[in-house]
Image (cartoon, rainbow, N blue to C red; front, side, top):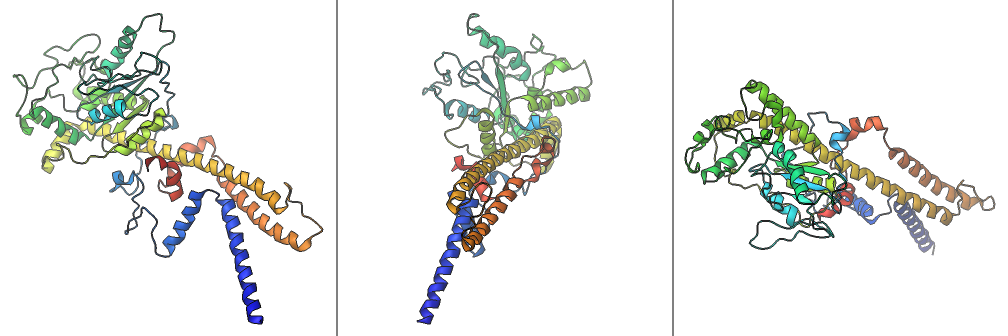
Length: 469
């Protein structure tokens, strides 16, 4: 009888401890995802794996990990301001705002352009018909386009128009599409583009030209005039340059494929357009690359071909628009299938030295923006969790018989002690949590935002990237 009584008391004690643990867990971490996080943590300690984890410990759940397989952790090289990193625009598709896509050759812009007209969740989706290259992208309730791109308005400002051409052409083109009575306020134009690794972009353009493609229809309009034949000579004499070897492609000093991304993103008016006699070549390119960097910082959005999922994430974050289907990272292209000797790659990098400098700058800015945006989402998620805990705290106090001032009931001494010990633990836990979640001073945000690990916890992923599942 004594043995049965002993086991009964032991069972009751264990049940009370378990109940106390459940109450504390529910208070500190009320959401189901958070509870699953604790269970996953416990299971990993006992040798089991959480869903989505591989046997080698790498997580397969994060959609961005495949793009950073060889990158242990991103280390920034350039110092950007909070304004440069916090890229969110007030794009109003129902009013007069227009997204302008600057399409640089062989950067994956065709694929991204199709995403813009076919893959965005819109109140009024673009109308695309089989056999037609252009889609109709009207605003809700209006016969007015919100997108200026190859697949919506065609090459209205010239084939693969650059920054100089677009900024001078697009406003007048959009104004000509409407009467003066309709225009009451100036439009907001949000420029976007896609960049690519200079070596592979250059090789891709060579393969494209080798198959007979040309861009003869490009205007290269600058300062109100077209370049002369002396200012912009051709690399071939026939109708196209089909069959050219890589050596021939690299040997032409007038080949616009070299440093194309820098030239297309810079303001050519600063260097006299295509007149090479105004200044030295080194001075000219130094001004062009600085102009391209400045435009990259200021345009609404740019993505990188090598980071498709991050590109999708940042576009959605910037414009508050969502894609229907996730982007796919294609590692196999015609350019990557070309076997290029290391010496040839080195020569290509020398030919594209300004594009190489621009791309390194762009990649650094792109990844810093990505981490900054992810951190913002984590902070917002923590604020939501803190609010949930405060709500639960308000519910727990009456359940334990406590007031807002922790006044103890003097008539029940034993029960008082137990209630006070539980609430003291919960109160101290809440105070510690609130101290940790206090907002940082404004001056410290820029210095501290990179200190947080991008893969901090599974909870951050569950709450911030749930849309990718």
